[in-house]
Image (tube, rainbow, N blue to C red):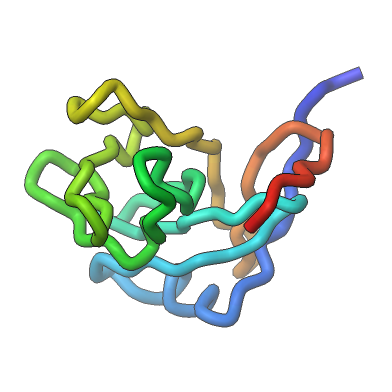
Length: 117
């Protein structure tokens, strides 16, 4: 039995992620997890929205020339592909994401995350 499942994203700005070709980010809650969803250079990315350094909202960060989202609070950068940061050894969990039938889906563990938001 697989440990992972695809979950449909329900977020107020989901149409922006699907329709635009410009860089766009938003926050969504999926299976109990707060995610940062980003469209950049025509590709979709999904990662945890909480910066592990001090809890900053990554969906409010800017994308730099290295394809990293930069936390708006203390400027810690995180790779859109891997979630790794060169600053302080921090990382953010990343998720496989796809757009299908005008909806966005994120692949994650079936276990519901019960963390604090």
